[in-house]
Image 1 (cartoon, helix red, strand yellow):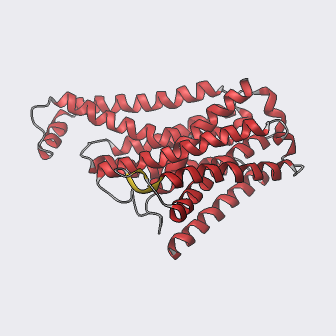
Image 2 (cartoon, helix red, strand yellow):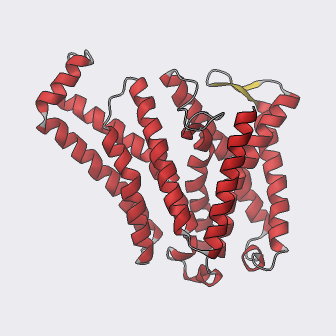
Image 3 (cartoon, one colour):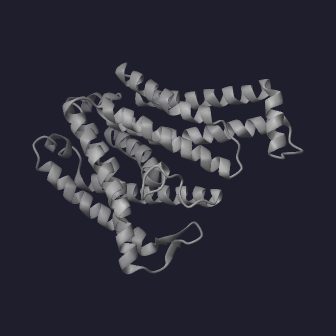
Amino acid sequence: MKTRLLTSAAIVALIALLFVLEVYVSAYFFDAFFMVIATFAAYEMVMLLTRMGRANYMLASLVYPALATLTNVLGMFYDLNIGYLLLIDIAIAVFLFAICFICSLIFKKSTLNEMRIREIKDVKYAKFGFKKSLNSFFAMLYPAFLLLTMIMLNHFDEIGFGDIAVFEGKFSLVILLFAFLIPMFTDSFAMLCGMVIGGKKLVPKISPNKTISGAIGGTIFCVLISACVYLILGAIDYFNPVISNIAIWQFLLIVFFGSIIAQAGDIFESFLKRKANVKDSGKILPGHGGMLDRIDSYIFVAPYLLLAFVCFILI
């Protein structure tokens, strides 16, 4: 427990430092941070797929976060619309998938040798190469593509919405702050409520420690504490222009569904670990396990918040 708390404190301190750098230096520090996190998470996803017996091309999955980050940063520099940025990210993943599949056909001897080692019979090498490439494509989308939407949240003021450009990055700062706080509040209070109240298990076959009381309590407390943070930010002159443009009922509705989605992300990663027959996705974070174990709640929250605030702005 002590190791876990120390690691958590170090993570919070790092994120706090990045927010300071965001305000006073540059938003690109967070971009680099997200790229590194996505790369580690992609590596762990590749290893999980391997343990499931699903062959894949590790190099392609690890190259994708860097390419997607580069294109996102360049795209925002040249004022590309958010829709184009998302399409480019998907196009890169499709391109790498195609390259992997073509390589499996060109290097037929290597593909057949791998099939022999894996004792795969009665399957054509082209089909094996296609499935192997498809597994790599999955590792690019989850977690890398989904997580890297954090970069778009980080530059939300810059991605094609002229009306919010006047906030000079403050709108992005608020959205990014809650992209971190929603999973944090939900996870912490879900664990506390589950320990104190107990009761029926939520998904016992996938994650035996999660309870229904924990899930409900996590969401309720997430909404309540987020409301307090909303009011505090509204009382601060620096953030007031942003907060005053978001009705509290709209904000809490976004938080409510964000909390549910955060828990869904946690359960999905638990499902993947169950399929791979492992307790943790890795060992990089002492007391927490792997990178995926720490960020699983954030992977679906990031694209959800992006979509939610885009709809909020457009409506």
